[in-house]
Image (tube, rainbow, N blue to C red; front, side):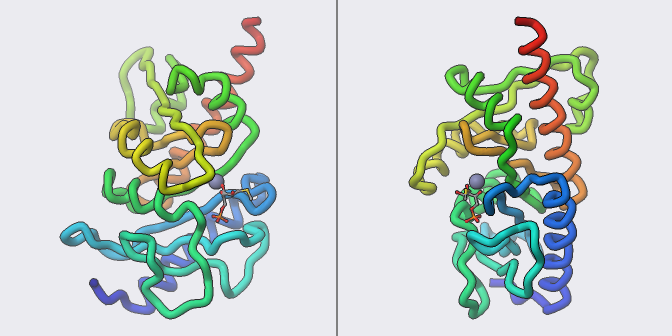
Length: 212
Ligand SMILES: CSC[C@@H](O)[C@@H](O)C(=O)COP(=O)(O)O
Ligand SMILES: [Zn+2]
């Protein structure tokens, strides 16, 4: 395991704190839902560490005990009484599959409704909406399919669903009637992706309604 400096850890916690504050202002953490993580240091021989939100906290307030570090198996790497997010294993799998640098998970009404509307077909289709470019997809009239996987109370059962459905060219995956995981090379990019997904979900929801 690579030893991280306290500056690296503090920087990661600072990034999470800033994102947490911005997303809380948008009411993206209702009822303690949601979790955030950033990778700290490199991935070497499949090993890595990341800072993640502690489980069950009110993410709209700051406390000195909001974040902790875990390894690629989701096990805390420093002595702590904090419990990592209940969904840490999903973060582990997304880091493993994509090599990304940050992962943000939020529950919103739009991502939940759209995931249920399109859940049986397994993806949300979106075509020719400008915000698709936020995913670095620049072609004219681009059509994307945002994967939806089943939601289980037993989190380890969700992991193979993510493994199977994650599309490397789409930086997000939706858990049906639960919420979205969006990621990026760093927290700036993960935030851009998450904002674009949420825009597209609201667009799809409203357009479907208008077309009826
Ligand atoms: C309280 S509802 C939300 C949780 O069940 C879960 O889905 C969630 O996103 C937050 O879990 P957490 O363990 O705090 O990271
Ligand atoms: Zn969740």
